[in-house]
Length: 351
Image (cartoon, rainbow, N blue to C red; front, side):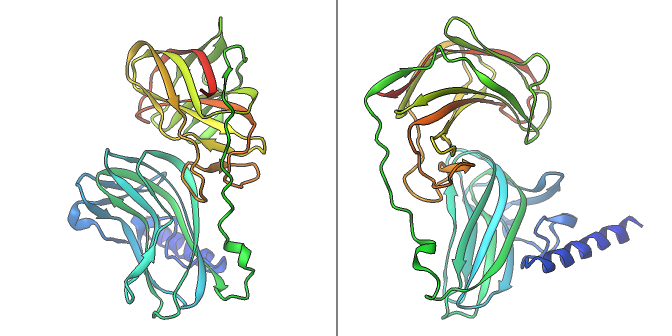
């Protein structure tokens, strides 16, 4: 009975996909990723169905590749290619996202290459099939190079129509790059009161678990955290203040040495939030001073460090900032523990 029910659900999913223009078979990787080929099996790459999506794991160095489908697309037509995924990459590993290849003419492309761990994000790109090929296209949502773990929740491919010159030229024009200017100053955030304290539990924003708190005590942010699930957990809060310079950040951190990670998110004047890249790893005990250049969004479209939430979506850091968000992220995700860290003399600016 279970077999027939499972088969029926897959058929229903295929019918629904066809109805909304989906071109890929099994875009949510049901039934052990039926319809997808494992192009990395010889290198030890494994594909495993999980409640979160398709888990891709590889322990070996070099090109591990990933799940793939081969489709016959229309030459001269444009397609929208997207996915939602998260991943952990070993040192010196990387992942190419949304990879496509035309075997006949040995050409293709990808959206971007990642070299660091990344949480759930939606990625999207458009590409056109050259008119001088037969349309056969190999699609790999992730091309994994080196050891790592990646979970893909879903992937999608939809036809947009002919990619002809009658389309407005500005539609795919690269936005003009306007360099961000950071005045020479140091802005003290030590007196700002934390607001909007919240948790991120199993990929959902929620109230902080009992025992969690963030307090400003004598110009020091005392963060009491408790990670309660074996999934991805985080505790975060906002410091609301107009910030017209944010090239550098400094602070003193008192750590409990449990190895969790401290991130910052910049929300600009138009409400667009920007992740600041590599975290501070809290794998030490006691107090340390940090004086670092903030890894700001790169001045180009579709960078992984560019806008990821809300706002005007122009992928540009528009000063002044509305707020700075401090994020304490569990590491590894499976950790279930509690502790206290503190941040003192928090300053931001350009000096």
